[in-house]
Length: 317
Image 1 (cartoon, rainbow, N blue to C red):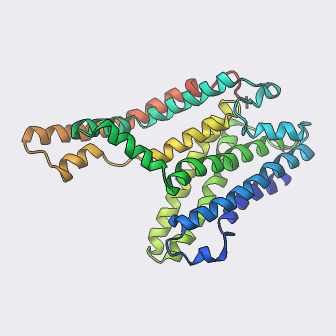
Image 2: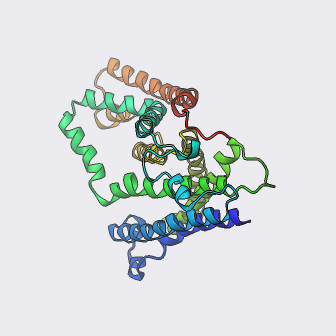
Image 3: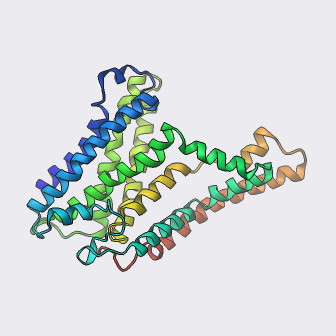
């Protein structure tokens, strides 16, 4: 019961913090994407996260039967790079950085289709490298980029991966069912999925979508984030508690987004249509290859996940 209460507290406190911003923020019509709302909410999340970074290790140290100390429970959150949960809290910064790189390689395999498509489109349209760098920098150099690629991944992984998993493992009672990898992957990740249900309220309050559209959107978000939560849980467990590998993976996936249609195909069928039959045929061929690459990416990701992520520091369950 204690574990369930702490899990619920961790999950709910993050969401409630979004709605305890100053009262005047509620007057902004664009809500979550208004820069003033974003800044106000980030300030609230920082306060709650700092509080929970103290509360969660404290509760674990007081109530866990494993005898973990407050310092040990705090370090197990993974905030400090180089610390591994396994083997009594071993430090190995070189392996830690290497694990982050391997996780980035793994997720790049998943996005092999979109990445190849982006490179091909840039090459065929003659976009200068300087312009590409400028565009990439522009993605990060505003409040939306900070939220989506820095603040969001850091705070969400700390709360919904690290805090939930360490709580789930540390407060496992002696009479509870044995922990299995499947349970650790999926049960904590459900909290992350459910935490996105509040977007439905914001959509309803905006008055721009029908109830059917809201229901479909929120259901997809919940399922997608639950699956994504299971992925970051897997990375956290198999890397021995490497929180920053989860953060980098989360940020990269946010940047790439959910795979869409081919950008190259759109460029040469809608924006600047191919002028010859041969060109049109090549565009059609690439469109087919693109969707094949999406499937190849899934297969590469599936078969490479264990080898790229698992190391000697992995948490064995």
